[in-house]
Image 1 (cartoon, rainbow, N blue to C red):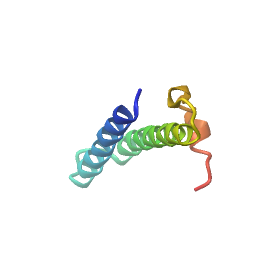
Image 2: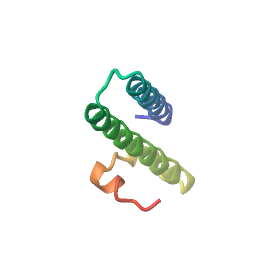
Image 3: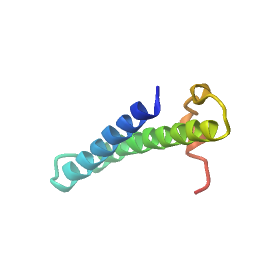
Image 4: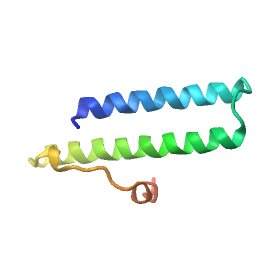
Length: 81
């Protein structure tokens, strides 16, 4: 997956997140259902951003960005902000 594809996936996930929040506001999703789906989308977004940062760091230091790989959700979600 290249940077452009990762950014495309990020855009799709952001749109999904916005759609979920709008559906909740309209009363079309239950809180529990929305929270579970929203959590999944947020985790996927975090993984995509992490992968993009990995690729950019590798490129900056003269390494092959293709050597980057998505990290497990449990690892990405435990990072301190």
